[in-house]
Length: 411
Image (tube, rainbow, N blue to C red; front, side):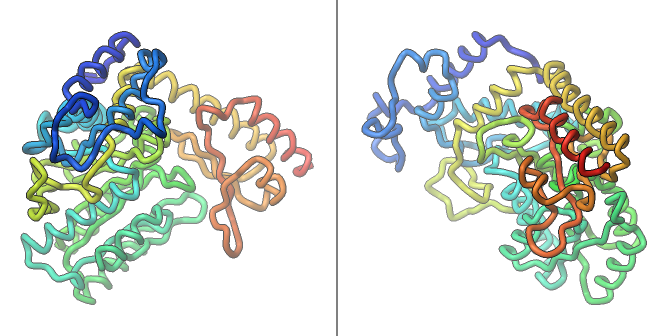
């Protein structure tokens, strides 16, 4: 790892304090033109010695606005400290985890995976309009039927058609023949420009798509396409656990990636990440945002600098090897769990590099699923699967209690 290091707590606090010193101090500043201030002292406790060892709370109180995309062009000078830490986060993720070349990436801390996925679709829609004079009815989004609902939200917001590709019930793999037929039919209907959402761990199954399958078929039919990787759940585990993963920027077919820090990384909610290759994000520049010093290239505009600092803290508290150990602890728990299910002849799906186990619903009584908070594939109609996720709070003792109860049902 070139940039992903482990820092001591003292160094973390020192770096954050230095960053906040380079951020507008509303307490002492005489700046008159910013539509923002410190947190309201009549409501929030903004003083106390406890803040000396609480850099994240200190960051929230400082209230920096990380508006813009800090890997490209100018940014608001008043918040440069938190912006620098965000740039360090994006560099670690793009270069060390997703194998981008130096300075060949852009990205920012988004509000979550939904925003990041829609950001990608927005970029590609505008790119096709700008470079090919494409119309909306010539564009289409492709994704598997297991893909997160954000693709449908993006389709609605951007007035784009979306088509779901069937997957095998047991393996959750895209059915290649179905994809081929769908693409062929879409072309016959006038579709020329394709946007692909390929999954690095689906929300329900933890299943991982092969983006090269999309690329091979779309290349075969000689149409324009861009592939976005939705790694909202898998982004902080799959590239670590699978050393041979090709879901990164070394793969020429991949143009952008989503990651969620508020899932595996345990950052505060409202913290996702969008990454893309250089030369793409400019397609969503909002030229009308002329009072912003820099370029407004994101969906949300104003963003919490404190959330960016939270991601920075987590990454540099662990470093690569500390994170590797944490991920492998979760995978060992997952291995233990599926061994128990195998002994009971219970059918499930699990990608070997992921910490999600999805059990066929016929083996799990509804009351037991409710007791242990298992997530169903659907809350409406016939549910066929229940999901168990090995997160940090899920220990072997918790799994053992569930196994013992499900064993009684299986006898």
